[in-house]
Length: 335
Ligand code: AQP
Image (cartoon, rainbow, N blue to C red):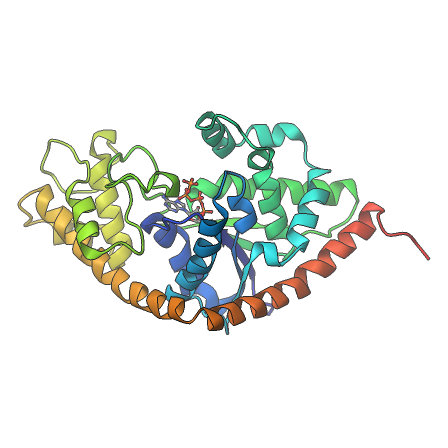
């Protein structure tokens, strides 16, 4: 039987955090053996908000190294940089021309991010069309993402279906979002009502960044916002969102079920014990990843070779797809 095809991406905007890892990257690594995988550093997406060129260059390599350090195996999965494969930008234009504007204006991420900016770039509105192309140019069946990206994957489904309907074809596979069962939405430690986010991660105490030093991790967990109670259990009560978030992180890292997690804290003397224990398991989780990332960044020639090979593999799939798309749309002259 054919393996399922998987596509997922991550932006090289620095500050890769525990939410990105638990909600996405860790699952990519864990499930890669059973699937045909395309994992992409989506640098074109990062340009939808202003970037410093030198920082972007550095972060793009660093993120690729981080994906490998987190266990993505380039012998098993295709790992590449989005802008190295021109089919993504070309496919985006073609899909723009079948996507109604109203679909994009409804996107929650666009509404959130555009209200936080003085000058909103056209690319920010168009972000989900580029993402739809990323996915459907690879005939991806599945897109493993955190909950925040579910709406964008649903839009990719709508765009694929609209293209198929307009051109009376089954050209595009309609992809499915795959959301984690635990840690689908890791919340900010300083404010458990907002998701842990790269753009807020410069604020000390908001996020655990994958490359943070142990002391910094302990600091952030110790200052995590909780409530005035003492009870350490999972709960949907908005008052207990902070404790719930800490338990969710602990559960995702240790792989235990919720009863076992609560049992681990039955004898705890309060939230202080919980915070330190969660910090300890996260520090141990990140230690080998950080060491491997350091080694990979010491040899960027090898990293660049891996990325060049990944781009070649990605091109071999996505460029013929774009070429055929152009033919279907009437852009290739007969003769
Ligand atoms: N808090 C989160 N919990 C679980 N999963 C998350 N993801 C992001 N935040 C969380 C998932 O990580 C993958 C890669 O993220 P991205 O780079 O595409 O997304 P992003 O939205 O730019 O990341 P941030 O941290 O949310 O940055 P900003 O501040 O720009 O909004 C995706 O699968 C995403 O679902």
